[in-house]
Length: 217
Image 1 (cartoon, rainbow, N blue to C red):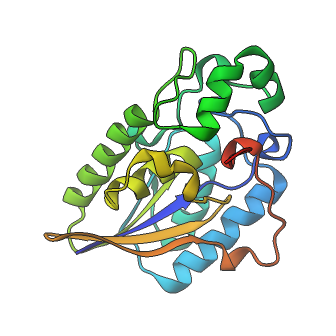
Image 2 (image 1 turned 90 degrees about the vertical axis):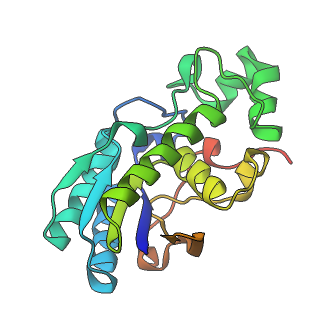
Image 3 (image 1 turned 45 degrees about the vertical axis):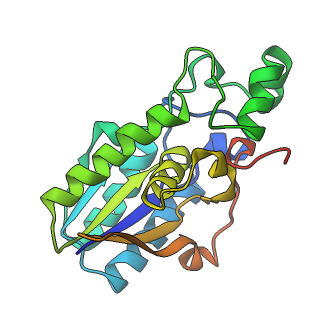
């Protein structure tokens, strides 16, 4: 059995001002750094991971480095864990996207599994590479515990993938900044142990951009 501790990175300024982040290489905000440290303390206290893998983007790498430092590890960037490519939407606010691409915007929040972001990735493309990453990491670390740090969109597709649930349920999985998810793999399949655990952040402020939750049913 391999145990995965799947972590969303800490807060950035673009979480607070609600912009589509994607491949923009943003650092953690001061609050995000505190969240990363809180996640690191929790993981070091509750588990003994053998490795830490991360999206190569700075916000995820900083989160992974905080965790790895506490656990005596080195954070290893893994390209397939990078955030979704938001294409033409990157850096824009939801309001700006809604004005310029109203049909695509509403599709993203209502039928995300079929939404097409101009010049960007689909959720199915994200899921394919993210599950590939999990499968490869699992093969490298059989019977060990590993930390994987990525992004809201990537984490949701991983969780829906291991649950064999369609991407149409994308907005039914919440991922707060610095949240922990735990699941285990075995020859018989995956078992989810916990989702969106933020108990370690009870003393930390939590803010999430609109792109991390649907604006309409």
